[in-house]
Length: 457
Image (cartoon, rainbow, N blue to C red; front, side, top):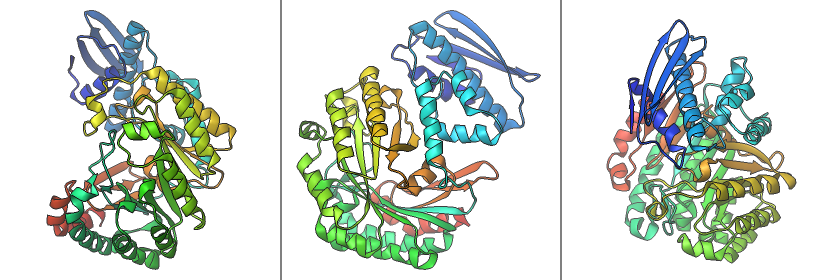
C-alpha cells in the first residue's frame, strides 16, 4: 500500500492513512531536505502532490521530529480532501497531545498555533488548555522524581474488550505464591533505586482479585518504601466491584492507601453481560457504599463505545457516575488491540456515535464541576478520540499526571511491568520491560532484578 524512500517515516505515514475509513490503493512518498526546506512528494492512486515546508533545524532529533510532522500533515491533508473526512485531532497521531503542548511552550512557541496548523478541532485545543491548567501545581519536570508501579496481572474473568496480559485468576492461581515471592524480592531490591518518591500505584489486572492474605503480602512488601521515603500518594486500583470486601478495604486503610479505583465501565447490566463482566450495577453501588466509611479518594472508570450501547445509555451512565460524588471520573474510548476478543467481531466502530458520547461526557462533567486533568490517545481508538481523566478541584491523581506527561521515572515491578528512566534535561526516555508471561517472569526474577539495577543506576 505504501512505499517511501524515507524509512523512519514508514510507520508514521501508515498511522496517518489509518485514520480514515476510506483508504487509497497505493501511496508513494519521496523526501529530500535542502537549505532549511522539507520537500515531500506524494503519489496517491495515481495523483501527484508536492509540498515545501521551511523550518529552522537545530539537530538531527529536531530534523526527524519536523519531517515526521510535515509528512503526516501533508498526507492527512491529501486524504482528508480526497475522502471528505476530518478527524477530531487532525493530523496528530501521537498519544500525548498535552506533552506536545508543553514542548512547544518550553521552546517559546504557542502550541495552539501548531495544533491549528495540524487541523486539530477547536474544542480539542480548548481541552488541552484545560488539562494544562488543571495540572498547575502538580506537573513537575525534574530529574530524579520517581513513581512506583506494582503489577498484579490477575482478574476474576477476562473482559471481551481487554488486551492486557491477564487471565482469569482461577487459571493462574497456581503461579500466585511464587509470583508474590518474586514481587517481594523485586520490591526489596528497588528501595535503593527510588529517587524523590511522588506516588505508589498498585495496578492490574484487578488487585482485589487476590484473597486478603495475598493482598496483604503485597501491601506489607510495599510498606518499607514509605518507611524510607515518607508519605506519598498511594493508590490501589481495586478494580471490579464483585471482588470488594470489607476486610480488603480495611486492610488498605491500615497500610495507608489514600486512593482506590472502582471500575463499573458502564451503568447498564445488559452491556455488562455482553462484555463478559461477571457483576451487576448493584454490585458497583454495594462496593461504593462499603468504601465510603474509609475515606479514600475514589476514581470511577467508564468506557465509550462498548458493544451495542447507545449514546443515551452512555450519557445516563456519566450522569450516574457524577451522582456518586466520585473524586475522579475517567472516560475511556474503546480501543481494540490484537489481544481483545471484540476485535474479532467488530471491524470498525462508527466515529459519529463515539464522538457523540465523548461530547456528552465533556458537557455533563464540566457542568458538574469536574475539570479534565490528564489525557492520552491510543491507536485503534474508537472514533479517533481520546481518554480523559476528570477531577474535582484539588483531587487530581499525581501518578496519572506523571505517567501521561512522562516527566518522572517510573519504577515498575512485576510481570509485564515497563520501567522508564526520564532524563528531562537531555530530552531522553529509556525503557526496561519485564517478561509478560508469569512463568517466564518467575523463572528470570534474579536476572530481572540485576538488569533493572543497572538500568536505574
